[in-house]
Image 1 (cartoon, one colour):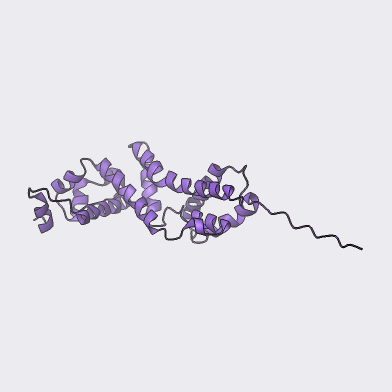
Image 2 (cartoon, rainbow, N blue to C red):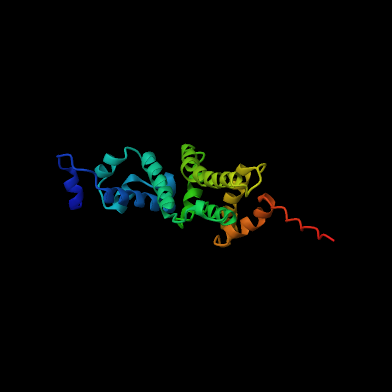
Length: 214
């Protein structure tokens, strides 16, 4: 039997959609993506997990693909909401450390590495999913580091000639390397920046001592 809130939603009269119900479906979808992957998960399983009927789900998302797009975007939006530190108020090196920390796919969702791996595994069957992964989960993260490096260049803290795209990509890749090597990701931001900073920062020339007069 459908839940009371679902029955109420089906009545005419222009009732607004239940945002809590939307979120339950999204969360059920994200959990199924981790456990089953895109190809194996079904709308029926998601509806059961979210405790809604299929018609209720289909009124919101007409296809599994559309639902997955929103489920992935949900995760990144929640991750952005979790950022509480203003990078503009930090010292240059610390701002880069925090930007690298926000590259972490598992910053908000501890299952993110598995989730992203499942999307990559669909590259042959459903190549569009990899495009969604790039648009919603990869480029915003990598772009954040590139933007921080640009601001640090404008502030005179970082050299003008650096390859920001490659630096950001390498930082992003460090999390996948740690995952596959079975290492903790907690120390990655500081460890990565400790290697990068001496190579990309602008070193201020030491002050010349005034000559003593005779």
